[in-house]
Amino acid sequence: MKTTMRGLIFVLLAVSGTVLLVGNANAEISMSERENVQMIVRVVEFVTFVTAMAIAWYVWRISKRAIKNKKSKQIKS
Image (cartoon, rainbow, N blue to C red; front, top):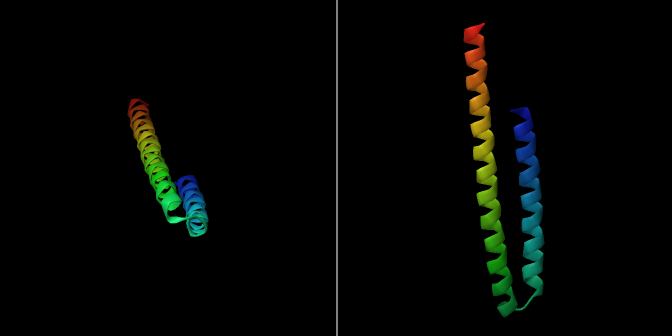
């Protein structure tokens, strides 16, 4: 659990740094280019969110299975 929280904090710092860079990039380009870049950024953010949720679900599933196996081994012993 401690490792998960450290990883979560790292991801949040990385995302917040990316948000700052996107803000600076949007200030430097014209309005028509900004709309294209904004659409690309939204698509990338959506894909990143879906990927993060899939990884979290997969890790949760593995940990749930490991706990179940651990409990069944304790009952057999």
